[in-house]
Length: 205
Length: 205
Image (cartoon, rainbow over all chains, first blue to last red; front, side, top):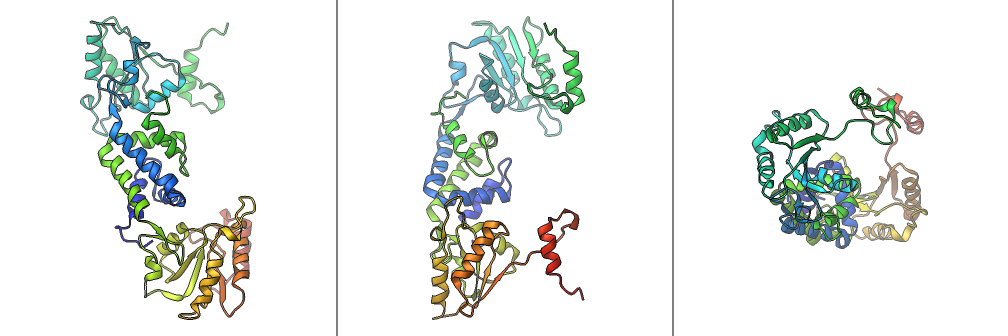
């Protein structure tokens, strides 16, 4: 490879290196592996990217990514419309769906409040959550909002703010339990989690 | 996201998860980050991939990847045509070029001999190297072949085999020196490298 920036390989590596979890070295590795079978790997990947760019949209109701708006979840008559699970981003929605534990609706905030990154309430989908809950009273009223936000400082600040905005209009606002991860060992647990798990201890029989 | 396989997002994640250094979790992260600004990231990446698939070819002489055949290096009259540096793959060629130490030609083997992976001499560009050296006698004869292969068992086996194939027809066959990496600490060095560095010790003044 010559090292001028007009080389297509160099441009591809530069774009790949900007993706989360990749850097220049891993981007080079990816490109070299793609070049081993260009027709079987490069083109399908390019077409999959274009298909996503062409077809994926954000659900106007909940912020989920899907080929249709409203999304498959909002559109599914079998889901419990009286519960809304508030998550930070679509990845968290996928994690909840993988677990299979929840059959209600979602609301994707699109991030967490962060003074450092200049993310205020207006950058998040909080107003639309409050509106959605109010409007639900005309059809199936929402009776529980589950704040499934990350157990980080930003996540908990955001959860607190969202709870305040929803107010106490007869809606039960819950959050995920803290405790020992299933399969986790006490010895490897941080003090905060251990304290939370101890405080929330439950009858064993 | 609904979890049927016809979802374009799911297909894109599956393709990305197969790339070296990525798995399902990091592929999901990449896709979510791309979806934040689809027009600024998704489409340029797709177009860069297609551009590479359309324009990159393997140099018939040396095996380098470039937009032209013969590649920029083989085509460059300023490079020393009497030296050939034999490397495993194009990534190693890039590493050599980044160092800027070498101004001769290259020969990309395309891998290393490996009984385990079923890679024999016929799968590598060894015969074409021997032919290239023989043909060079009509123009600028090659007088040095540098075996810059990885210092692994496979790399060294391959180096040995390549050296045998080239034979001793007045060509100097060299390999990269083993020793202490620049900036490296003795304490962290493996025994093999330390032994090699000690054996090859040089006069300090």
